[in-house]
Image 1 (cartoon, rainbow, N blue to C red):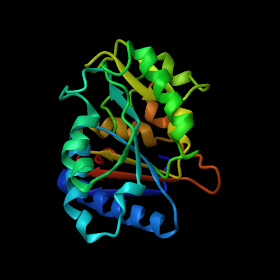
Image 2 (image 1 turned 135 degrees about the vertical axis):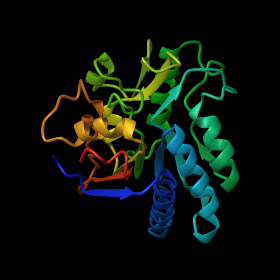
Image 3 (image 1 turned 45 degrees about the vertical axis):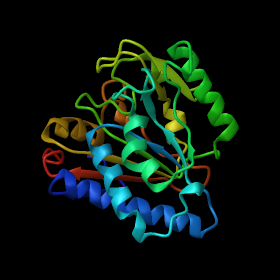
Length: 246
């Protein structure tokens, strides 16, 4: 097994969310203390919901100016803007609107772009015009099949290296249409944090961290932080069931 820079195994999902939230707040405060305006890519899913709740809960204890944190998404479902399936809607409700974040760049919904290709193109253009050149932090979940963001096993998007965001159709996980950042975009970051819980993810975790494997079978293997300078940081926050095959 290729050991990542840091592997944190907690007993249960609530502890994963609390630990990652504390570290997130510390990281944002430290970046702003250096005079930086950190750019962060958020993820979705059950553990992201718990994480976002914990960040909002713990935020008053930290000196973070939320108007100077820039938020993006690693992927998004191409659905209506009020759909409960939108990652951004949940994040706003339990975290971003609660803390008063003002620089929030959502991926287009069906109301913001005529089709999923246009949505991906628009988001890539937005990142070129308003991005910071690299992320300070990219947060990702992991599917039981080893997918990250909306980069699925066997899909052609895994080999795209000349654009920032790609459309995804026929997703094996509903809804079928999505927008995802590509590997080059996700990897232009100082840090990547994986947040993974449940024994249903244990095999995917094992394959992602194995010494050998194919990114086309386990897309998580394609995540390798490549910041503009220095070494990238990779942290896996796991609960005990997700780590039980390591």
